[in-house]
Image (cartoon, rainbow, N blue to C red; front, side, top):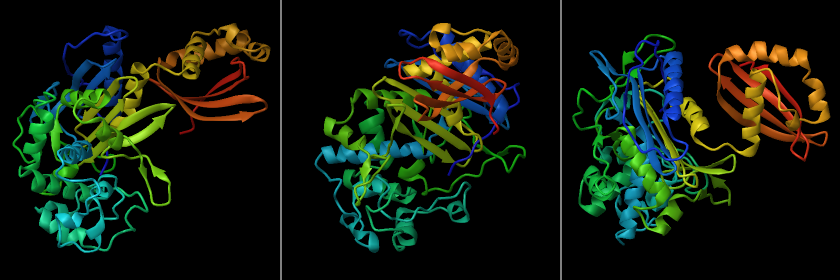
Length: 459
């Protein structure tokens, strides 16, 4: 499930953690992140958002903005815990990998080893449930809490009602998201380890990584922790209904502040918790029966965006949305957690990544050109004779007068790249504080630009 929400300016209250200050991370980053967080809250009406940023392998920002609770009102702090929902799957997969390292199971073990009562899923493997290639029916494809999830359940009930249904496809032939498989994975952890799922995670993951504030949604939370909110259409916020006990388990049960999740992200980029072969397995995109790949490993999205490896997961449940992204080569990570289920935190995370990650050469040039146009000038050395011909005094004056009031760029993102007329054509999405724009850039093979046209986006 996934949704999101917003706030009208007056609740933008923040609590900050003083953190390490490596190169390129200073009060300017904090000021800029604060600004984009305040803008996101104002535009979406989300009650709160809590953010952690890792840059150059160090936690450089941990801060909450807004209200963790509305009735009664409570300010969000950096230690307020938020539901991770499906980001829990990162930890469930790691638990299975730890047990595999212990020699107590194999990723190729079939489910019948622990669930002899299941039907068509008898030969489904642990690897297939962790990679969402099992064919087992997902019990929660909805963006709300359906009637069956308002009643408590057990693993035995889920096996009877959902796992024993006919498979949606032959195992390994397709990729299709399934919370059901991760409930089974957590049950395997309990049966193999002899501990509760949460106790195993605490002993093998949370304590070694000093993640001191983690809870399970079934545990009592404090008044300082975030409450979840929903809304219907464009109506007012309501306290979100809760999923009943038993459903979330290994699929979506964990609750923590972003700074704890950042410690986990550091372990992913530094590979400190698992053995090298486990990380290789976790970070490898799944290969389907026909040889095609899907951008998912073991509990992790595996993507290459603008030639960067990016891993992580999103989460969405009743009243909460979450985003966790890690760039291992850059030793950077961004966590954005919010207690609404209508405004996607991925939009905010993109704007934070714009501030945190080093831009590619093409993006750096686009940023420089746009900033210059807002100031009514260009660097003539960046342009060909044709480009310099276009940017005459009238054009530059109109660009300055129309673009400068829009505020600084919050995001400049490459949307497409093609070739035409012997030139490379790039289409950029540009988000400013007061407008959504796009730019068409055309340049020669030597790197100089013939064109950089800025227009308002139709959407």
